Length: 167
Picture 1: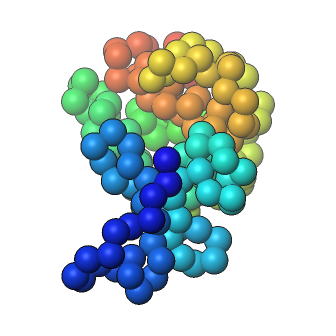
Picture 2 (picture 1 turned 180 degrees about the horizontal axis):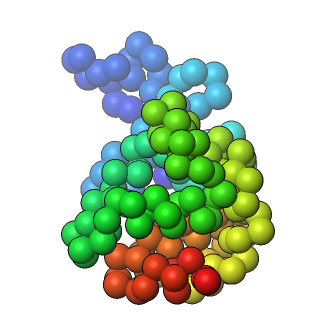
């Protein structure tokens, strides 16, 4: 449900024509193609809210998510080196390349677009992560991201590194 923001004193909507979408009790804003802000499910995504959500994930910097992967594994007694090994196995990057990509703050789209081995290895990953079966994800990039999530989850759950890496 898209509503025009109600003009009030100090409301940015009066000047910029902002729109908002109320979802539950949270108000969510999204930038549109023309530089203005529009609600999720805009013409850019052809009305598919899942695609809008995917686009947000694809544009997210890998460097912002990487520390969370490491933190999740470390809470369960695993190391940063093991997380790096999992990422290197799935993507095919070397440690130096991985460190450079993190320093460059590339987004997920760029990270997986340049990955040398991800196309060959992501079919080896199966199972459920966050209630979604990895094999059934239609968007190839989202499937690769879910595969990475699944591998980090398996590592954090205590699975042996050799089994996580499908060796």
